[in-house]
Image: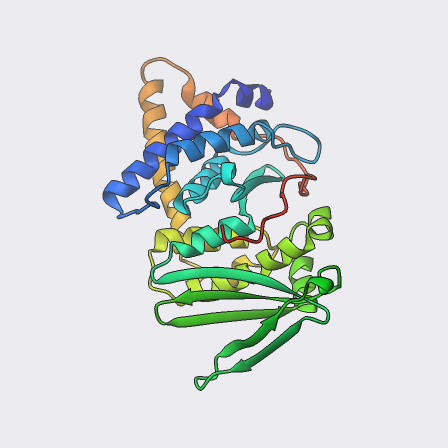
Length: 310
C-alpha cells in the first residue's frame, strides 16, 4: 500500500519544490550558483536519471526512497552546481535513502567554485614513474617532480596525488596505494566493480576528495557550499560523519535548509487539507516506504573520465 501511495506522487513536483527552495535561498541566504549553471535544467536531468536508478532488488528509487532523502540529494546537487548530464554526479540507493555522490569531474567542479581556487587536478602514479615529494620552508608537502611515462601506463598503480592551486600558492595531497585501498575499505561500496574496472579514475577521485576536505575545512567560504561538499563526501563512508561534524549539537547547513523546506511543505499541505483534500495523509503514508538493501554501483554508472580537467 505504501508503495502504491508513493507511485501516486508526481516525482516531477519534487524538482519543482527544490527549485523554489533554491530560489528562496538565492534571495535570502546569499546563495550564489555558477554563472553558466541552470538549476532547472540540472534538476530536470536529475529527474530523468532518477527514473533509471534502482535498488539492489531492482525496485525504482522513486518508489523505495523517502521523500526527505530525495529532496536532500537534489538540494545537495544544486548547491554544488552539479549536473548528472555532465557526469558530475550520480544517485545511489542505500536502504530507503537516496544519496547523491560526486564523480571526479564533480569534485573538480565543486572545488573550483571555492574562493581563490585557480586550478584543481589529480593524477595517478604508476610503478617506475619518476615521482618525488619534499617539503617547503613552511614544512608543507610539495610534489617536486612527476614524470609519467607511456610505457608505465599498464603498470600497477602505486599512489596518487592531488593539486589545488590558489591565489596564495599550491596545496598538494599524496596518497599511497595502500592508503587508497584503506579508504575504499571504509566506503559503503566495498570491493565494487567500479573500483576494479576504473581504478585510475577512482584513485584520482579518492585523493581529490581528501584534498578537498582539508582545503574546505580551513576555508572561509559559504557554509551552504562547503556544507554540501562535505555532506556529499561523507555519504560514501560508514564512519566519515564523525570526522566532518564540528560538534554534536550542530546540524549541517543542508539539514537546516531541509528543515525549513519541510516546514514550508507542511504548511502548504495543512492548507490544502483544510479545504477537504487528503494530501496530508498521502504525504505521511508515502514516507513509510519499504526498507531496501544496500545498493552497489551498477556497472556503467560511472564512465571512465578523460584526462582533461572537468
